[in-house]
View: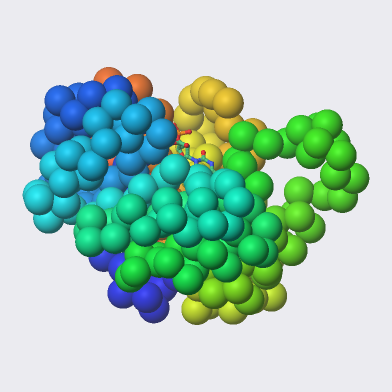
Length: 238
Ligand code: C5P
């Protein structure tokens, strides 16, 4: 969204999918001038726990803790309590109404983002789990519920973002993983199925894009960040 005053250096949340604090630090040192927002997920958090979060926040950067809490409401609430006073900006939660409600109750200033449907899921994955509807409809109903319950935003692919913006308004956050560089660039989708470019994600209404492998696996990560930030700027201006 254009009017939320999110600086360009926070629009890309870099996924620190690495297995040690040393490796994470190398990336933060390399990209710190360009990127002010880092995602700590299961791999890195299990390896290093809170000290890696501190390493990032002590350098003045923001952290999205992406542990996708999914458990009975009381357990999710107590897990959220563990994040109190850790300087975490976003945390992710999965689940139904009571689970999301429990997370929201215990947010302590952290913005709660509800995972709608993983960007690695395609229609066949939903069918396998017994859902007969479309991904778009499922994302929409899960997003609507999450916002009614008080979540600050949702995680969804850039493909669904525009419908959510039109129907649900501008006041909530959309964070979009599954980003791959420009359409003409040959780049692996990896395990992601619902991918878009950073520019399209922003045009469709995303506030933030989460990017991991396209930067991490590039021979020139700084250049990829630069070109994605240019795309984002274009998306914001269009
Ligand atoms: O490497 P890549 O850019 O595909 O990384 C995407 C990151 O976003 C991963 O860390 C993954 O855990 C995360 N993510 C996702 N889909 C979601 C939520 C988070 O891919 N729905």
